[in-house]
Length: 404
Image 1 (cartoon, rainbow, N blue to C red):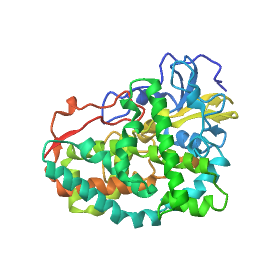
Image 2 (cartoon, rainbow, N blue to C red):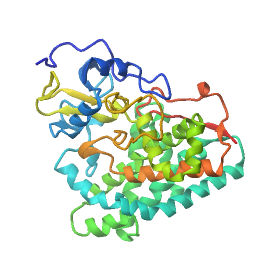
Image 3 (cartoon, rainbow, N blue to C red):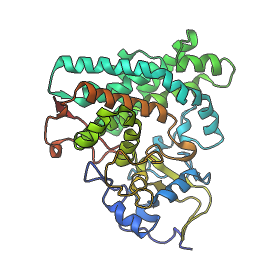
């Protein structure tokens, strides 16, 4: 077996996209060479990257692969160690392994079930219609990011958690860390959002409402299953998790469908196709990639002809997996007719995105309503001039000027 002690390649990780409609071009050669490759992190440390669909699933489902950021081998993408990146709040279960991860996750599963999200859909539809009412009333051109794409998840998470939407003016800029200049800015923003979340939980403990925080207070805090600090950590991560991914997918989905008018016409003629189209958009763009799926091996694992050793850094390249020719025919083509449901846009295994049913509902309703109510929607500037976030951990757009 080839082991990780051999030198890393000269390629540096993370790799960057150069086209808004494809993963980093180097992924093609990496997949062709094998399911694993060694790369060099900004710190100079070596790491495994997993490139093919089956092996990405294998790694993300294996309990010997840890998501615990406090593990000594957990990889960071900064040149120098970031002690703040290794901290875990009570209840911040995204960064934990079993059994702690499962204990917290099970408490929240009913809030994100298919049945629960189906009950939320009328409210989501009304919210999206109001946003489009305002955008249309203000007239063209508009920034789709500010007028529509960002408010959809912001309003939606406020409805779900039971916090006032008026407060989005406070927490939304603090969640969008890309807009912050320094490391200190980010740390201040985190502290301020945590303080806000703490107050929201305290209010619910005094007067619980019919919402996620209220139900956690009456159903979990009251029984002693959750402490105050654990609930604050859970709510904090839910508040920040959905914004960038959903907002970016609304914008990229809009742009992609405008570029494929024949398929958009099919969706307009048969709205029942929208769920499949959303899954294809999630597969095609795969905006959350390697840095999102950083892991550490806690025991030796054989993958093909390679051995990942305990303590090795591992990154699952979900964008590469979603464009793996072994899993998807013509993966570089956008095709709403393909069965894309098995895509890895939400990850895989125990840490697969808890809110994927809600995210799908937001995307389906947002895109269907947008193109039904604004049938002549189109970019207001050339695609090459759009401000794509090629250097961001979550790919997308900073702004999206549109007209109609």
